[in-house]
Length: 322
Image (cartoon, rainbow, N blue to C red; front, side, top):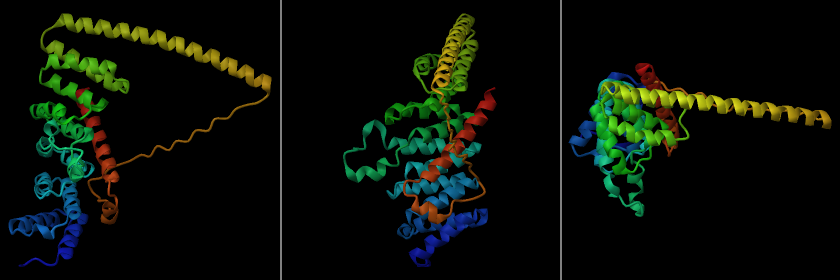
């Protein structure tokens, strides 16, 4: 009693979310809470709730944003990881939100500890689609690092092997920063093997890891290990320069051979380059139209937004540690 038809309730929530007005968003959240309190959550559909959660997160209202996600899990309307990761990303742009983000990942991740969800059962597909992935962990960990909650970050790191998430280059470097901040030198040494074997690290990420290791040696007053590491890096740099010089010489020789061949054959060559790279941006002041949001069943646009926010978080982190 007191609630309008289901379609009206959900349309109202969507309108509140699209407005991105804090007053309307608060009213929308109160409406959701009231529906749950009165046992009328069946009036609420999954997509409008997710949309409202995203709007709340964009508006800096991390507590209600995360609460809605928890309520969805509670009623087994599991949000896709690409969708809730976007909510997570916007929450992580502020200190209080970053802590809640870490808590949320821990809570959702707990459901998947030690392969307790059987992937062979088709009925588990919606639940498995919610499982935290590498991007979700990167976002939560980057937020923890930026705002100094590195002990909470270690809880997330402890969870990674329990849920079987594979580390990418960003995650390896974030782990290094966390271990350095918390003085976990042995963990950094274990991580070093993965860093040295990783083939997709860029120069900046490689530098960040070894800077973390060096700082940790110095924290422990271990000047011998620090000096050995610096000498080893200098040796590697010399080897790399020599290899680069040989490679350049080889390319120059090959170019000369190709030039001679073209002159003999009388034919030139043209190379066309197409740059299809799109510059993506995210905004806390606008929402994707609900129709697009609803049609995007795999939440690819939200995944792209979350990736962009993660990039911004990592850029801030890079500036912070320089």
